[in-house]
Image (cartoon, rainbow, N blue to C red; front, side, top):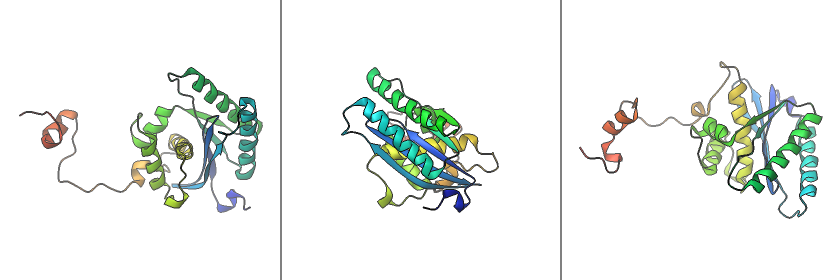
Length: 210
């Protein structure tokens, strides 16, 4: 297999969405303002019952991905402290194994919270995974047939893209907004505040009385 750097990528970012049932990964190649998807996929461990066997499989697969694509940096989603503490602990274990694999290969690591990644990609920290997947597909021009049924894979790409946005030089950075199609003009002046928006769009705000 051709070494990814042979395609003149300046750097390669490995993004990880950690999990002990399904772990998502995605790799981006960066060259100036050009960002391309090298690969994405999932490590499906739903049929593996023992948690320690799951962690061993994760370490083996992540090490294999690193040795195949030679990423320069790792961007990984940090565990979200939700209502189910056991789920959070399991995700934390998976994250720790991935970080260990990166440390063993001397790869710099950056963590981003789920809200931070969603904010960078969609502009909303509480955006749905489906919205993240849609924007990643459009931004990276991923054919529909290459999209996976697991949103963990696009979440991993989003982690990598968030890292790119956070670390690329200002002159070389291309935001998601730059890559999305321009909205058709409605002839209305852009609202500077919520009050302006309401005044300009009374027909779109429910319950508004003159």
